[in-house]
Length: 302
Image 1 (cartoon, rainbow, N blue to C red):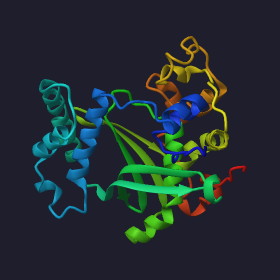
Image 2: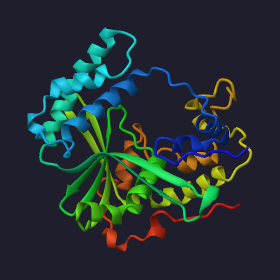
Image 3: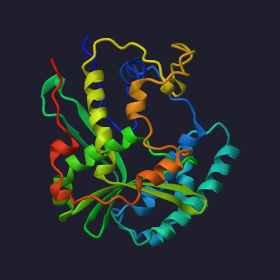
Image 4: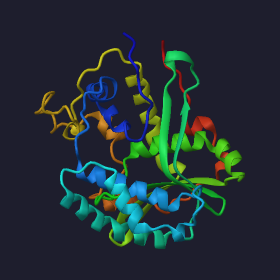
């Protein structure tokens, strides 16, 4: 039986830390879609912000009814009870309203924009990548890829950021034709929101994730050419949906894979963030960025 591998996306890349996890969740699709309140909240906030900032909608953003759009976004999702939904709507209204006021001067090119790319090989050996970007923003001549987060923990997963950059930079020429703009640089932004709007803005450039991509690329190749999917115990076991049935006592160990492609920085590691100077690092413009530097196109072995 031929295995159907999904596209590599920022949301799927975490499971690459363990072959059994990846196989169970993304090939066999054994993980049920259960209600998770924070996921519902984030999904509704994303929907509302998209509808309130989408430049393709004829009505000007300033004239769109924020409260109604937010409420409709939550009504479109299943909740176990009305009180919980109402509480989340109450939490979302100031968050979204304040964020929109703070970002009203942004030149938004597109919202909820999907892009993809693939390795240079053809047929079943091709590995596909994909990402859905919350917003494409023009800042001067810089293309900003923005991801909006509602999590209380301001962390950026390095592997996810790497995949997002790969997809964005691989589609740069297409973006330039589409928006009739010659971009001088690409920046990936993570906008963390709270009740006051924008609580934290983490900015990444190509040089920030380059070393991570080298290791992640090798791991993707290893997993996507596998015919066996054994468990690979490590710290990632704490996040694995199969941890109780698989290796319940393995969560205290940490595999080399997790150390390689784990979080770029965590909420608790603020000192490391300051040491690396992630927010302020300067790199050359995109005209020096070559496909091999970012995507590093590779061919699966047959």
